[in-house]
Length: 483
Ligand code: DQQ
Image (cartoon, rainbow, N blue to C red; front, side, top):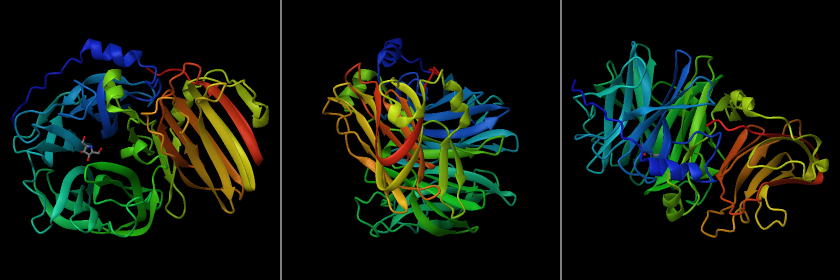
């Protein structure tokens, strides 16, 4: 082992000040002190403390020379920033410490991550001290010298590592040229010497139109395999030639050396606004997932703001009997609710609810063809407004997010987002909308939709509800800040 002392780069106070002054900065979603944030990494709970590592550039809000940022929390809501955990150093991660996981190697906290060097990524290992703050990179990095020689692959990175039958197993995200994305399976006795088993599952990038919301891409980033209830899920983020498309999952059955897929699902109707998720089992046995909420404003606006990227709220993931996943914000988030602004029939809401930190809970009953519209971050004259629409069509409903008037700034992303959600009891949708400045997350009967919006007017804080052949109750709370 060689020790690379990790100096903690101090984030320039000017950058932190700029980030803190930005009105679009979320107040109860996790954000880096300043600079760049992308994927959640190394998620774990140890001795009660939740640890969140993340892809981070402390020097600027751009994806360059990626470090691992680190924070911990006792309640999944309030986070304490800790020193940078990993930073690039001469050798196999000189160009970046890309995504990975933390495992407990018989009492030794161990990171398995992708080191980037000469434009390619290879698996690396680092071991940590008891409080997970000091990390020592393995002198033998990279622990795999190359991807499997018999495959023509497009990329090879990101790790999901678990213990099974007395040995370690991992899948690495990849893509087979002219075929599709894949998760390559390996096993090992010591996390350093890995034997290639084969592809766990291979996608077919020609099976759907490239513009389809469930196109599986040419490469799978951030593969994550887990069992929840009686179901297995293989989560991945569909990628193609540098473009981050969307997170998807296969429900099915993990059978040792292969994954038998049952059906393909969208993980979040907000597509790239919940990207590269990672999950872990907490000490209470819950499956908790975080994802990266990318920016939807111009590079110039992001540079001026001094920060980029928010972490989603922690989500508790459970499974329905058919293997499809149900997601909900961790109940700990409810502790941020202040005195309710409204609790009653949604048609009576008038102008009693407003704010840019809100939690709205609706229970909507829809006749066939009926719909509900919920506008948030709206000015009184309607010049800026972000509109959720829920419309029943027979046995299911469509949730959409209209961002066409979210911002008077024409350079912000205004693509429509949405997709299908199931009905409860034939006609009911429980819709929860969390508004946190530019970070929005909605959950409709367990199906999430994450998005980013950037209103320009300070009076863009209104909420309104319109119903057509529908009834709805509404509860609304302002949310406290967690930073
Ligand atoms: N981000 C990381 C990669 C991963 C991608 C680099 C997904 O390891 O494939 O920051 O956002």
